[in-house]
Amino acid sequence: MRTQAAPQMHSFDETVFADDLNAFKVFPHGAENNEIVNALGQCQDSVHKWGQANQVIFDASKESFHILDRRRPAGDNFRILGVTFDPKLVMDVACSEIAGHAHSRLKSLLRSRNYFSIEIRIDLYKSHVLSYIEYATPAIYHAPRFFLGMVDRVQETLLEETGLSAEAALLEFSLAPLPTRRDIAMMGLLYRICKGNAPPQFNSLIRRSTGARFPRNLRHPEAQHNQQLHDPLDGSVGPMMERSALSLIHTFNMLPAFVVEAVGVSAFQRHLQNGVKRAHQLGYAEWASLLQTGVRKMSLNSFHQLFQLQTRCRSG
Image (cartoon, rainbow, N blue to C red; front, side, top):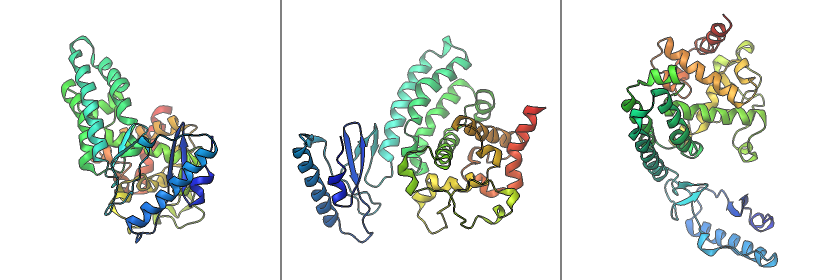
């Protein structure tokens, strides 16, 4: 079932998932809210007319208008695929909900800690708590650190109750801190975009580089892999963009070629986690934020060494 003609008639883009239809449009920064609401109403009328012509009934109780803007938002919070979005896209409500439910799950798990070994407790946490937390990673990745801290506290509580340090959890159980895991997850998205198997909506936001200028330390041919992504961050964007997955493009472009050429997302992300482990083993103080901000404080050779050394260790 398609509703393509109705939204596109008013220059809206449509996204259809199961029986849900979302139509959106980017308006000029100076557009007034009443102008935007009028355009939304016209799009809605067209969709309803299409429905009448095609014997499709829309549930009025599930229809709503939302203006997403940091300064002049409008509309209530809304849910998409189980995640609550606020019109400012701060994601404070989503982080609070995720942290609350995750803490409840963790509390239930910890009640039985005397009956299970640490290894089993960690496995149970990964299966029943971590999987729930990370479902929303793409939606909350750009949230301010203050709100993400509520979510991060869940795993910190587990480690405290289990008597594990963050370093031991990483090295012994491959359980990296949640901020690190979020970075690795979103790097996996960049990998999929680079390989051409990500959802097509991302193609308009992130694309392969077509000869654009690279950072200074990537101009040498031997330092570049051949799957560079265009980095749109030039220091003139706002904090939300700096916190988004776009900030990881710099890291992706600095990766050694053999990491980017890994076969499959799992293999690619395994390289990343091993690099984080190696950064800790070498005494790098900012190992947990290596992929986000730490890489910007390292030379290219030092960064590549984290991955090359792990290869030598495996082959020795």
